[in-house]
Amino acid sequence: MKNTLCSARKRARKAANPLAALIMTTLGGGAMAMDLNPDGEWQIRWDNTVKYSAGYRLKSPASVFIDPVSVRANSDDGDRSFGRGPISNRADLLSEFDVQKNGFGLRLSAAAWYDQAYNSLNDHNSPISANRASVPYNEFTPGTQKVAGQKAEMLDWFVFGRNDIGGKTLSYRLGQHSLIWGTSMFFGMNGIAKGMAPIDVYKLNIPGTQAKETTIPVPQLSSTLQLTDDTSLEGYVQFKYRPTRLHPSGSFLSTTDMLGDGAERMFIGNPTANRCGSVSVPVAQRFNNCYLGYAGMDEGKKRPNFGLALNTRSEWLNADLGFYAISYRDTSQIIQTNTAGGTYRLIVPTEPVRSVGMSMAKLVGDANMGLELSVRDKQPLAVKEGVVSPADPGYVTGRTAHMNLSWTLLGAKSAAWDGYSLVGELAANRVMSVDDVRTGVAGRYPVGTEKVNLEKRKTSAGMRVIFTPSWYQVAPGLDMSLPINLGWSFRGNSMIDTSFPFGGSPERSGELVLGVTLVYLNKWTANLSWINYLGNAARQPVLDRDYLRFSLQTTF
Image (cartoon, rainbow, N blue to C red; front, side):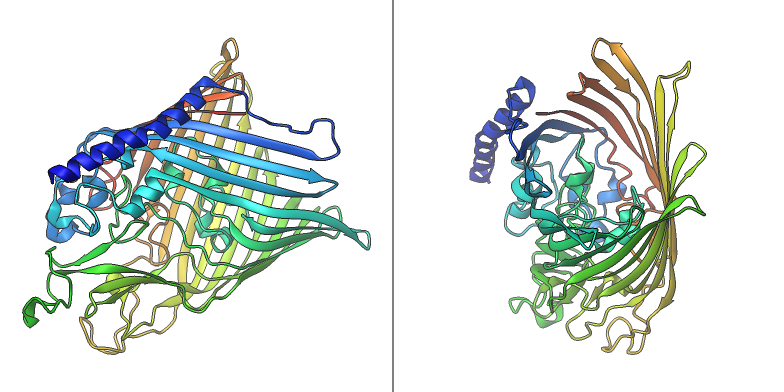
């Protein structure tokens, strides 16, 4: 163990060099190119956003979330990995390059980050319940370290253009990019957007992350045909499956140790050192209180995702309308266990989900309102025990209905503030019918038992509201705002989505975020926020993980 500790400390010291370099770049300024060809026919831009962020956990892990290990072995790593104290020490770079002329061009963007907290030893103190196989219990697995600790990846890479066809304009993009339809702002997983772009759940919790960084771009061809000034037809075809990126296994807000990047084990019963099905233990003990090793993801038969949209304006309703029809493979996967082989893997649902919907955007008084309604067929639903097996691989699907209602209100100057914004969204879904799928192999449940998990709720609902009062020129060149962000789950434990309305699908629980944001010369942005999780231990899986977060960023 001594050698392991020394090597980890050496890695931490060595890895601190790029972190320091990025922080110095952020804080030191330095000229970076923007308009590279200001007087030429080609418009060429290179923009870079550099950011430093840090997090600090305010409470030690509560015993109710980590004990007993026989119950918490598959959900305690994220809680145990960080005691009270620092949880992040991170630098980010977002680089964007655009070149165009007469409507034709190229866009490239990439992100890189380094977090020292995930490149050193952690606070995990329970070797027997650690879901790690490749490293000691108090180190992060390579997969977790890569996604949470140090990584660089391409985001956008596509060409674009436009042509006039019979007096109508056809625009198109080919390559890797994100495309989102509908009016949802915070609950895209509950709308049409769910089938169009997988979400990077981990980045949602990184301070200062821009919206364009939280969707995972997909290789695709998308186009828009402008029929009239008020009406357009859109379409897309995606060429590659991309899953939702969950919190990496063992990272601070992870609540499922056997899922996410870096996952390596899943315990069955009390954790032991025995692999399920191992011939080195007596026959009677091979499948009791053992673990399964992660065997990867199975995409199955590849099918393209595609969709069509009609956008128009109704003068009668004085509103913008959208009508959508899409087909996609769900970006969430199903756990398939192979107890005899000692493994588990993630299965991509084979049947495509078909979804149709409509949206309406309208000015109501001083508020911009958005309403989105949709229905899905063949939507995967929760199964008993949360897993299927190779001998009985059938998973449950059904028809579901979804609603998102959003609003944006901008307020004028008053005695209390110079201005304010009130942004919010209410989202709900319901299982309308369940396809009849039953167990085909006897096990815990007899043959013929409905596979759908009836302990989950058919109806779920949640909301998020952000009130942000602002004050301008509180000091020369300095603006200040105090965002108040409340997210609340009225009804969780969803049969449709275990991350709706928030991670873990909490019941009558939520989060309150209070912050202060300073903007200097419209160039430097600093934020300090307090994140407080609401609810009780039985309904809110991250109740003991309140934390402070700070970020400082600038763009050149």
